[in-house]
Each structure stands twice: as structure tokens, then as C-alpha cells.
Image 1 (cartoon, helix red, strand yellow):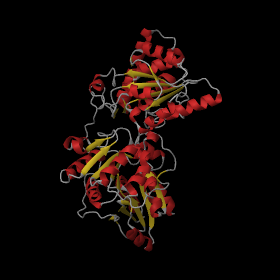
Image 2 (spheres, rainbow, N blue to C red):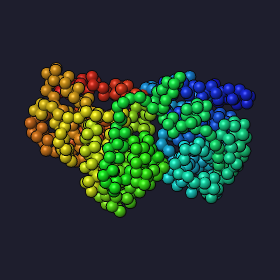
Image 3 (cartoon, rainbow, N blue to C red):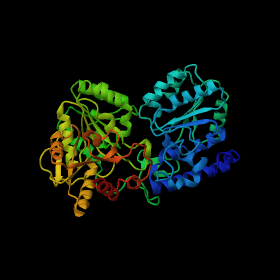
Image 4 (cartoon, one colour):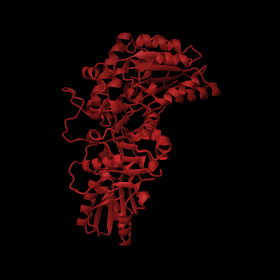
Length: 549
């Protein structure tokens, strides 16, 4: 099924098509994982858009892109949808590199109105006639960038805004009144599952010479009862049994996020100054337990990361101890606030940087590869990465008592619980785990420590003396230990879950720097991506042996 075919279908056939698309989304996501409830709610919207517009000449922008699985199926990727989020398969977000039907990249929220305005200006300067359509939903209109972009639409250029209200807004406000105040003509709210009504409204909006907003109401999780009943639980899911669906896995092992949340909640029970902040990611960052226990000290600012960091700075300036829990990929949106509002004033704000490193299936828009290169140049900022839950708790306690800004980074996935160290860690001091006199020393960060230990075991068995260092700190790093090893003639090899360009290995001047290459990494399982980029144990052993010879 392609867009031109959809234009010829009867209403009855369109209803059958919507059901078929939902089944395809459910079957694929149940196998591969992905963003489920938002895309299930947007199926009829996609069909109406494809009937009213030309998706190759008009520009349809999705904000945010995890609403757009039906868009992928009904443009040119229906036959490949089973490869969703798999290595060498299709991505989970719109991407012009993947298909000419995708007008823009759409992994982070809030950009559509600014991009649409730019596209409309370019169209008008070039004398074009195409329509520019921004589909904004899942609380993206509450994003700071979206609100900033609205100012440019006063008396502005021809474009169409589809406001998809699926009940997930993190900030409650009268969006329709807001849009009117910025010069939009706002049509009556529509049922976002009524294809005929939406198609008629879109056709009407195409005749306007000024900005038009079309509010629609959709049901998140439409057609799948568990997701309709608990849409947030089914927002982003791992693979599940479609015959007996549950949104959460059954692993008894805590992940890094939940381990952080528990540690912070425990510390907060003994220190009333501690507050927790998030940007619309309470559950994802492990803060649900904190929010339940200390609702007055928990703040969710919505999808507004600049606001998040500045808010935390205000709390810290007035004597509290704020902890900002944020994914690495989203902290990128607030680096200026980290520098200007926190580091310049040496404020005691702790950044718990989740999903640091490769996140796997969500791909290039969501990998946390760049936090070390972006942050390690900021004066006065301590940056640590624990290799176990015990180190995480210790770092968090020290950070909250330090009186200055800290970053504690950790990856997605299961945390290492077992830990045999007995001494409290010290800032800037690494831990030698094995073979301190070896001629090769592997300096590993956090989740890479177990991998370094496996590498060292193989190398030692092959006659290459190798030691392992749990680096613990990126800034300040252990200059004394490094100097002693250098003086003894050791070769220094760094291993990090992040970009090697500007990363930890560069900071310590490692002879061989192992980590993710200076490129945007695609999607797939972490294991598949590591093999593809030579970062699995066997490949790393070969690279080290080649370097040593």
C-alpha cells in the first residue's frame, strides 16, 4: 500500500486499513520493542494526512517522531517494518536519510514549529507552492523551543499545525487560546479517529494564506486494551508476549536508573535539602519512588531541559541540593545552562546523566555519546562514572555533600550489584583492580570495567601482561596513578562507552583509545552495534594485540 493507493479507497476500506496497520504495529513492537501507544493512537491521522496531502512534495513534520510508525508503514516501508529498530533495518523515528517521505529528523521534541517556519520562508522566497504541515503531540507544544517559535507566526506565513492531543501533556494550558493569540486561525476540535472529518479540515486549511491550527483528540494506545488503560506504561516498551501482554520485563535485576532512584530516595530521607528534578521522564529516570515518597521535593518541568537546569540552579542558590535526572541525549539541549547558570556560580547541582553511551535500538537521535566531550572542559565540574551500584551510591552521597557541581553518568540496562570494595571512594582517585605492574594498563570507565577484565584475562592467557584500572573519575582523573604507570613504561589503553573524539581517553592521553567512533551510530542491539564497530571483546583483544606489535 502506497499513498496514491490510499486516496482511492472507500471509507469502509480505510477502516479496514487502519485495523491492519494497528495489527502490524502491534506484531512488530511485540517482537522488537519500541514506542507503542503514541503510534497506535495516530493511525487514522496518518491516513487522513496521506489522503489530503502529497507526502513527496508537501512537507509533513512529526513532533515527536515516535507517533509516526503508521507513517512509515503507509509510505514506502511497510514491507520492511518488521526490521524496525534492528541493525540495518528501519529506524524508530522519521529520518530523511531513510526515506524521501520523511521531511525532517524527529527524535527530540519541540523543533517542528521552528523548522516549519524555516521551510515556509524558504518556500516563499523560492516561489514554491507546497504545504508545510507540523504534527505536534505528546506534550511537544509545551516544549520551550516550540513556544519560542510561535512568536514568528504573528501575521505569518502559510502553514498548517495539527495539534494532536492524546492526553499526555506534561504542562496543562489552553493550547487553542494560546495559538489564537499568536495569529493562528484555530478550527473546531476534531475526533482524531474520524478520517473523513480530518480530511475535510485539512482540505479547508490548504486554502488559507495564513497559519491554521487544527486540534484533534486521539486515544493513546487505540485498539490495544492494555495500552488504552495504561498508556504511559505502554509508551516505550521492550519486546513482550502479545498473547499475555505486560509492559514491564520480569528481570529481578535492577537497572542503573532504578538503582539511582532508590539511592537518592534513601539519601533524601536523611537530608531534607535534597530535591529531584526531571523533564517529563519521571519513570524512565527511576524517580517514581522519590516522587511518591517526597512529592513536595519532586519537580517535573515537562519537556523543557533549559528550564530544568536553570530551575535547579535557583534551588541550589537558595540552599537546597537539587539532583537533575536526565538522559544524556536530552542534556545536550541545556549545555549552556550547565555552564552559565551552574558552573560559573559553582552551585551544588548534581546531574544524574542516564543512558550515557550506546542505548541500542533507539539509535542515532538517542545515543548518549557526547556528554563527556561536551562537559569535561567546564571548569570546576566533577565528572564520575561508577562501575557498580555501591560506587553509584557512594558518588551520589559525596556529590550531595561536595558544595559544587557534579555529573554522575551511567548507561542504560542492568546494573552491577556485586561489589567487594570496602573503602569509600575519593574524588579523582582510580582503583587498580589487577596486575598493577603489568606492561599494559586498561583504564576503563563504569560499565566497561567488566569488559576490560575479560579482555585482560584473555591477554594474560596469551602472554601479554595486562592490568585493569576502574577509572571512576573523568574529571579530575587519577594523575598520580597514571604518572606512576607511565614512569614504569606501561602502555595505557582507555575503554569508554562514549565518543572517543574529545572523550576520556583523550583527556588522559591514552596510547590507544577505544570507544565509539567519530560518527553518528545507527540503531540495533548494543551487542550487534558493538560487533559492527569492533567494540566486542574479541575485536578489542585483536585491536590491542595489533597495537602492541
